Length: 283
Image (cartoon, rainbow, N blue to C red; front, side, top):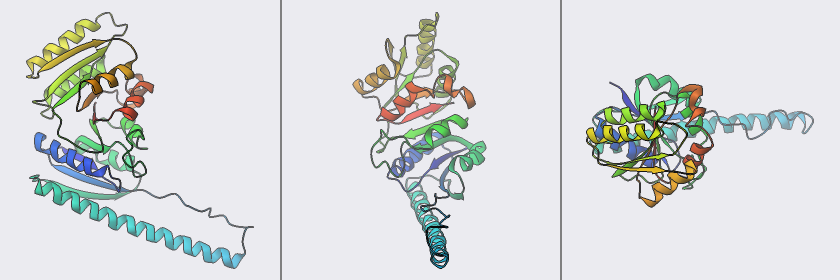
């Protein structure tokens, strides 16, 4: 059975990742995996100190640097274990029956890609350990993750609240058609009010596709509010989200290198950096 993979770290965003994962696991009735990846930390000092200090002193400092690296790795390992244990306990207390905690050494993206075949949803925090609560600082892994995975990704906001509605940014192209179909096939967004929003483009049949999308959502049991807007894509979508108290943004994306064609580009990166609600990327 495919799992929800929730990626946690030492940042304050991990709480919302855990809460989002517990919420999604309950709706989808899926096993839940909490993943903590220990990446190699960059060396704080140059290892080539020749010509700067004497041989004896250099040898002593290099030994101390090696000891610090070992201590840092040990602390990261123990802290990760505590984070995973706390997350697993929280999920069990919330009623999740199938929960596992996994800790891996290596680059985060590589680790996640090695587990992706068993995933139905990946959850990651919007920002990392250095961002605090500043949602304008996009995590270093987010863009790379969206470029490489083929699984839907939920990018959480700092403080999770159960959504009452969502906005589907629809442009009539293949990406958002696939996103629409995933929404209809999944139980994750069932019962939430849907705001179907599009920005006018040059497609001759855009209005027709937009109307058809609304009909499909209504037939699927959603209460739908439609808006056909004009102007700058990211600005109009962000304004709509804020003015209509939208709890979650849903967008489609190409997989692999085609991400640049719609999702990964200046408009969407602006939205990820400036949107103050969770973003669900359907792929």
